[in-house]
Length: 343
Image 1 (spheres, rainbow, N blue to C red):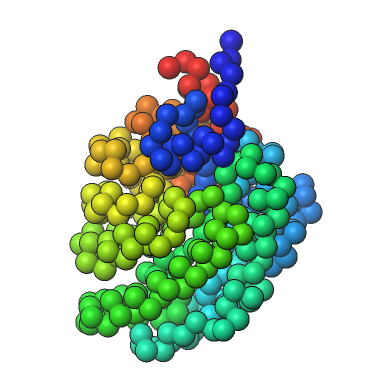
Image 2: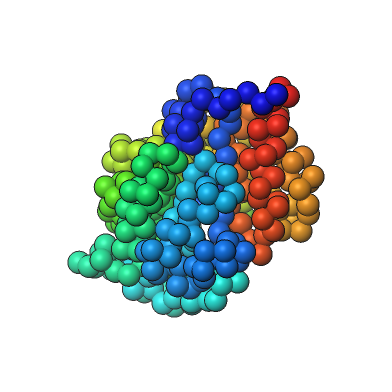
């Protein structure tokens, strides 16, 4: 017999982020769960769904209405701020995400960083703000609306170029800190606009990943900035960093962020041990192998592993492959409920 759930999805997510008791572990992907099948279902394909608020909201809502996740994440790429700043975009069709052409950086030095006067009115930022307004009105505190504002480290990759910025971090740490201090204001402006529009939570991607930089980089360049973001953005923040991050998780746990969305390259039991209750964890179902190319049983096995480890919210590790089969995504909330009933 299935025990009744006593919380709605929004209550469940916010309680988990606050470290409070929940009726069951939430399923909350802080990135997104858009797929080609879902685009077809609601007639909201890429690239239009990235730039039209109504289509954006329609596609985003399927994460809740069709998949049964406890959150709605109304964004499907990492380009909004960078596009509004003037970076060149590579627009794709519905089987691929839009991307920033990072081989054509727009700035060279921190002094070049300027926020355009129409930043929030640009098509790519205003689409997200308006989509959040639509979703907030339509769902009326029934489900957690998760906005997203890119952190300064990720923005630096886009506006300076990855190689140039990483060389800057080695050759001139002071210049790097000046650049991050300027770029963080973009994170705040866009984040505050989404909160005003109705976002309950913000994802804060800042890709200081172990695939590119050492764990010490996080402490040196980002820890204080992330602590400041917690003070300035008045909703729970979910930090997202792809790749291997166990070597910096102790520092991340000191950031004050409500939760950390972590990659499948990190063992969930080890992550829970290091976090030690200082920060929540959300993740970390593998995307390219498990969700994309395996079946429901393999998905269930990974969900159970995370549940057994004590991960606070269950989710794919990042934005899912667009060709992911719906049966694999539907298995995530199903497996969470069945694990809860049997434990």
